Image 1 (cartoon, rainbow, N blue to C red):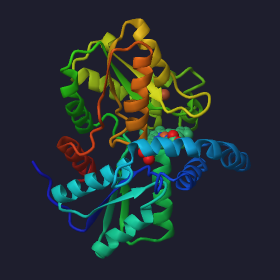
Image 2: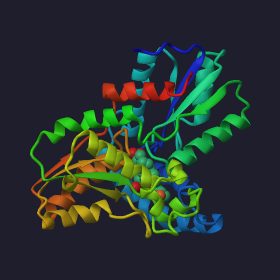
Image 3: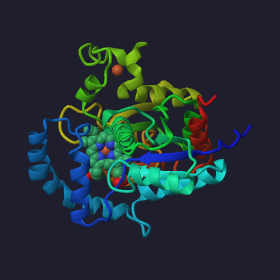
Length: 344
Ligand SMILES: C=CC1=C(C)c2cc3[nH]c(cc4nc(cc5[nH]c(cc1n2)c(C)c5CCC(=O)O)C(CCC(=O)O)=C4C)c(C)c3C=C
Ligand SMILES: [Fe+2]
Ligand SMILES: [Fe+2]
């Protein structure tokens, strides 16, 4: 049954953001804003500034710009355009105003709040949906804290509510399973669930029990209040729920972490596993990425393009990349469900 339209409510779809263009200067500005975020690179400010401005950005910006060129469309960044399309579809479906905001670059949360107010000056509640299924301080937390600060500083006249990380939500799992199921009809040896990596020490920082790393990740597999903010537990849980729903045999799938930047990140690493798998007899691989709900640089360039080269280069024969849920109708239904969840 469709939920009734809520009067005077606005919705914001929040995502990470992309550079304004693929020019090195725009990519450098974006990387600078991104990596100077203390929830992303969590070193003391001065050390971070020297490292980011002096070493990482000058070296990375030209390479990143080349990578962005391979995925850029005439409308610009795939991540931003897909988020816009999701917003349009959700708005048409729910009959409530939907805006988008990005953590880095534009549009900012302030632009999204202002646009909602312009469209309806009587707005009383805004529901913000961080489009991250899993809680990490470098994704969900930084997006929410930035938007909350902007909301408080500007004293907006409406209530603001954030949708929690939805890694185990039944509609998200259903939508994700629907999006990958057709690909699983093809013959395959194995399915790799590739999640964006994070530094392991970030788990410690978001762990309310203080036990996570000290006990060798024990909390991830045992009932714990730490799960609410434990990225590692949450990605295991998404994988388990998807495998259960699709009846995947235990030896037919595994999990890995991609996009590492520096040492001490969660393992196993996707790029290393892609090179090892053919030697273990896995020649025909399907790769899925449940941490991303919209295709972006990390899926289109890193998994679809580079991942294929790594796997085939190491002796693999067939590599099937599965696109993100993007504008799939069951995913739009799932966003509607997340917005209305817990609304009495
Ligand atoms: C899925 C959630 C994400 C987490 C967690 C995350 C952590 C994280 N990322 C970096 C560094 C980079 N990430 C980059 C791109 C990027 N990251 C995410 C999502 C998460 N990141 C997305 C959706 C994207 C794609 C953006 C796009 O425009 O398409 C980049 C930029 C590109 C590059 O140079 O590789 C960097 C840098 C760190 C350091 C980190 C955790 C500490
Ligand atoms: Fe990232
Ligand atoms: Fe954990």
